[in-house]
Image (cartoon, rainbow, N blue to C red):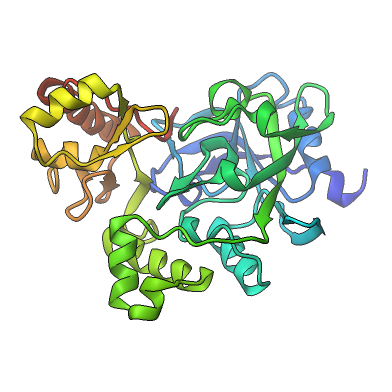
Length: 347
């Protein structure tokens, strides 16, 4: 077996640097995966063959409540390239271990717009389809073409299209059922040649306006990218400084009848009408109205500038964060009759 196909399993591996909450937990075994062949070598190693598995990229969408009693695959596959084009689109492929924000910046440097609204989202390219990441009026699935993955049970390499991935709001087949079955190794995106800006979100529009009339009226992709970065940095804490996993709760979507009843009681309710007639509510607004912004339970806290973000102020455990999240969910349910669902995977 060549060096690139060998898999070095490390026992008792610390995961503090591999989850953005900074929880001080360990894996029974871990393996850094820089080549596809290393995946199967790792899962077939007799020490780990029968153990549970966890795939980590940047660890930006996971709450680890304790040591992981199994094999953690640390995806470090790198590479990005323009693979083809047609009359309507460019197709860009990136390896699963590529940092997401750096990849978005690279596409723009190559003159390939389309992902700029998703700038500064933490994590890796491989995590993007699992979560179907989205921000400022764009979801990843709108730019998705296909992905390449390894089926761990057989070692087979498969290519899955959007239908097979079953994308939903911050959701996919992988998040629901495929997490232990497949490891994503690369993702291909379809970027439109007939690009049009998406700058309708209020925060984004205000930032563009503050940068000048030209940016506000006819922003190019780089202007939107820069504005998104500025808005996110102003509102959201840097995980390298203050442990967090970004937005902790999904924005709930309710039926129109429920929305009208809520609006009658809460005239300032922040909402977005969906194409199917249902209404998306701003989870951060609901949490703020329940008085949680800046509050804490132990070292787990709600960020003082953004109620949608839960943070580790130092020394918090995954259990502490889940206790805080549960208290918030109960208060929102009691006041508004709306159930909040966590975005991160809790293990």
